[in-house]
Length: 385
Image 1 (cartoon, rainbow, N blue to C red):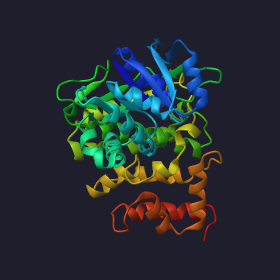
Image 2 (cartoon, rainbow, N blue to C red):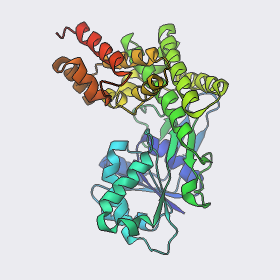
Image 3 (cartoon, rainbow, N blue to C red):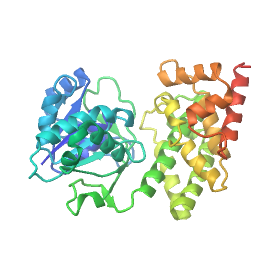
Image 4 (cartoon, rainbow, N blue to C red):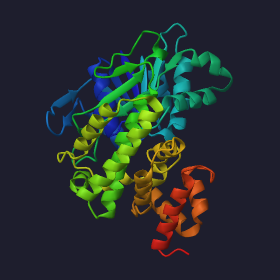
């Protein structure tokens, strides 16, 4: 069996690639970073180190890498005979992956089993987005080529911090992981991924993960940054930060109960587990890494505005989530392009325009006024008239 995985970074090697290897797949990594591709190809194996209580080391073998920037035809040839294609590249990069998948499907035998495609991204419906990009790239051949593949949405969860210098292609991760995959697309022929669980309705799993893990992680970063704390684990050791994060997650849990009928007691246990994961001192993770790309994180269907909008629509409180958004507005990192852009927007456009542009909310939405007021408060704080 063979899997082609787009994105040979830390998540690709330390999570997706590891589980594919454990499922018996030969893993072909595809990436555009020359040095990374060369380093992977020069290694016979790499080790995934689980840091924290119960962690063990996993040795990964049976892999190779191809530079999809310099040799997209080689990647397409691998896809033509692969069983599985996965991605961990970020939702905005999926449109660049799609043409290579189309080229692979074009070469694929019509008699071959359908290619099983899963986008493992921190976004709702990422595989649907990838399928749409494949359909668009295929043009007139879309109907024929899409019949050669099946597309399944997934929800993935594993903390993979920035790696220590000199680690090479080894990866340090947390012991905990979750990979939920919608089962219906496969027609009974499921991919062999140890530890993954297949579900009929993925929506509750995606939103539970996004609105708890991603919301909590980013909230810890932004509240921590406000208090001058460097590490996520130290941020959660701060009573004020921990209280703010807990309050935000209590609001997201209320939304999940209202939207999906999830059990409040189980959600409380899930929240506690998530916060303990963030407190893991063996994971050297920084507020700068977790807080980067704040404009994406405050966009319409992301970890703050998404649940806060749902809360407002259900008549539920969203004060703590709005406070997290306000903390995100104060995130000022000169090394992060989106942070620089966010701070420039705060200084150059009015609060209504800023809120509309960055959150995607209409001014009539019940959440809009609260975020607009947070924007105005931030602008007053930094001296914008």
